[in-house]
Image (cartoon, rainbow, N blue to C red):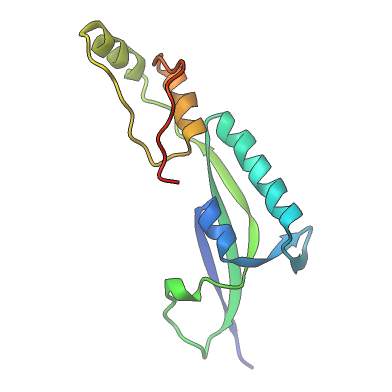
Length: 139
C-alpha cells in the first residue's frame, strides 16, 4: 500500500497564496476563490496594523514513490491551511537608544523587509517620528 508524504510550505503570505489552488475550511477542501483571498488578506492587514508579523502555511500530499527530495518547483497546486501571526516586539532599550540618536541630531531611517504597516507600528512603539513620512517599498 503506497504511503503519502506531506509537503508543507510557509512564508510570506503573498508567496504562499500564489502556490495555492485550494483552501481548507472547517475540515473541507475546496477551490480557492477571489473572495477567499480577499478575506485572508483583510485579516492579515488587520493583524499587521496591530504590529503582528503574518506568514502563510500550505500543504499538499505527494506519493512516497514520487521523490524523497522536494524543491521549490513542487510548491504548486497546494492547499492553503491558514496563517500564523506573531509579535516580535522591539528590545526594551530601543526607545532610549532612538531618543539618544535624535538628541545627537541623527536622522534615523529604518530598513526592513516587513510590511510597511508593521514597521510603522514598531516605529511608534519606540518613539520614532513617523508623521507624514512615507515608506518606500519594493512593490
